[in-house]
Image (cartoon, rainbow, N blue to C red; front, top):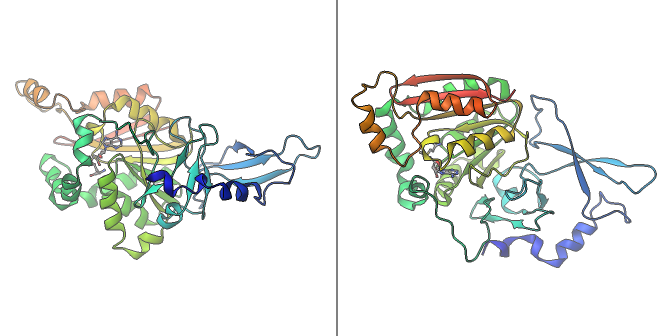
Length: 343
Ligand SMILES: C[S@@+](CC[C@H](N)C(=O)[O-])C[C@H]1O[C@@H](n2cnc3c(N)ncnc32)[C@H](O)[C@@H]1O
C-alpha cells in the first residue's frame, strides 16, 4: 500500500519535524512559506523555487533561506513538504515522503516513481481514462514501446529519436541550465537524453502510465550515471501537473498531444507551470496537413475520431490562446514539432 511507505504516517516523524533546526522553539508549526521570485535563466540549483521562512510573531523578523520542494500538491498546488534525504535523484526521492500541509494528503513512491496523481493512495476509487491514455498503461504496450512501437512513427514522418532530440535542444536554448519536465515521457527515451546531456539542472520524467514509468526505470538502471543524476520519475496527469505556477524552465512533450484527454487543459497547465521565458516543445501526429488531398480528409477525420489528432492551425491556436508566444513549428508528413514561449 502506497501510504505504508510514507514517513508522515508515523508520529515519530512529526516529533522530528518539530525539532527541525530551522525553527526556534516558540515558532509556529508548520512554518509559513513565501516564495521569492527567481531570476531566469536558473542557476545550477535543482530547486525550482527558493523560499523564505518567516517568523511573523517575533519583533526582530528572522528570515531564513530554506529550499522548498519543486513538487506541488496536485489538488491545491501548494508546494509539498518533504521528509527525507534532499536531491532530485531516484534514490533520494524514493526514500522521501511528501505531504501537503493544506490538504493533509501524503504522497510517496511506488516502485521507483513518485505518484503525484490526485488519486494517489486511494483504496476504493479507480479512475479510467480515455482509451488513448489507458492503452499506454498496459504492460505489453509499455514493454513494446521502445522495442519497435516508437520506431514505427518514422513511417509517418517522425525523424527518429536522435534527430528529434537535436531539434528539441535547439528550441530549448533559452531554457538551458534550468529544470526540464518531460511530460508524457513514455519509457523515457528523451528524458534519458536530456538528463545525459548535462544541459539541465534537473530532469523530471513524468507520465500517467505506471508501466511506462517502470520501463523508464529499467532503462535508467542500465546506466550508472543516470541512476545518480538529477533525474526523477513522477506519475501525474498532464491536466493536473504537480508543480507550482511559474516554477519550470522547459516542458517537453514528445509524440504526446494526440494521446491527451484534453489538449486544451494540458497546454493551459503547461503554460501555468512555465516561468516567464520558459519554453514548451511538443511533437505529435497531425490530423492532416495542407498537402493532404481534400478527398482523404473526411476519411482521416473518421478514422482518428476519439483521438486528439489536431491540425497545425489548431495547435497554434491552442498555444496562443493560452498566452504562449514565439510560436514556431517544423512539419514533415504527419509529424509536427512545435515550440512556444511563456512571455
Ligand atoms: C506515444 S507516447 C509518447 C512517449 C514519448 N514521449 C515519445 O516521444 O515517444 C504517449 C504517452 O502519453 C502518456 N499519456 C497519455 N495520457 C496522459 C495523461 N493524461 N497525462 C500524462 N501522460 C499521458 C501515455 O502514457 C504515453 O506514455
